[in-house]
Length: 269
Ligand SMILES: [Zn+2]
Image (cartoon, rainbow, N blue to C red; front, side):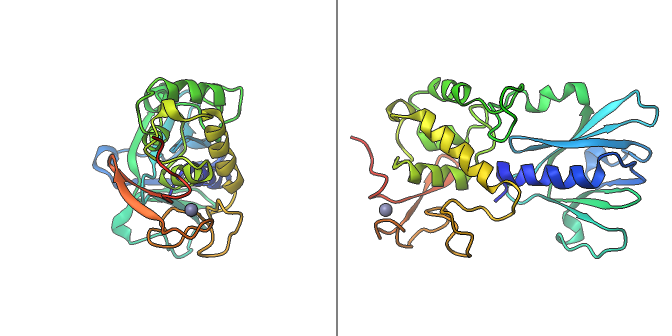
């Protein structure tokens, strides 16, 4: 499940492969960018902002800067290959873009919201986002727990699970971390934001969990990286709670599903 940590890792991968390199050939397989040719452009770097990826490029004369935006949603991914290496990221009809440099080939599969904008217009794409859980503190858009809490509190009647997924409040949490953070804090997913005693502790824990998984592709919240032991509740409907043995439940909430232990996360009354 691509969440902020996966997107951060992907930005590192693309940055390492492309930064400083000139694109020799580009191939966009989405109608809106079908005629775009980035050959001769140089990649200057790649950054993540919440769950958004920003690959920045500078034109052949150095005057123009553009940003290639992509979003992974549920199933998108970028892979980097050596020239001549077999591509294993998925069937070719899922490929949305191919960028070739002398040393590597970056292939984007199932990407969403693929767009090319002047770099100074990036705020149009990511300006609405709340503080980035993995962004550098003290920098614009970077992590700021107090600001995340302030934004969450602005909608006091909203269920905490839905509020945490709203990227305008804080950017980078997806369904896995949402479910796990609420379990670890003993909060029912339906608790109104106003009834959460310590919102600061909730967002701080979310930040810690994402940061702990940065740099690896396995997402673990239990401290165990062993297959089947990585998480407490996410994806474990019908399995016993690791703390109390009660069966984990799964229910639709808004347009997502949520997983929780009814005993460890009792509804407030
Ligand atoms: Zn339990």
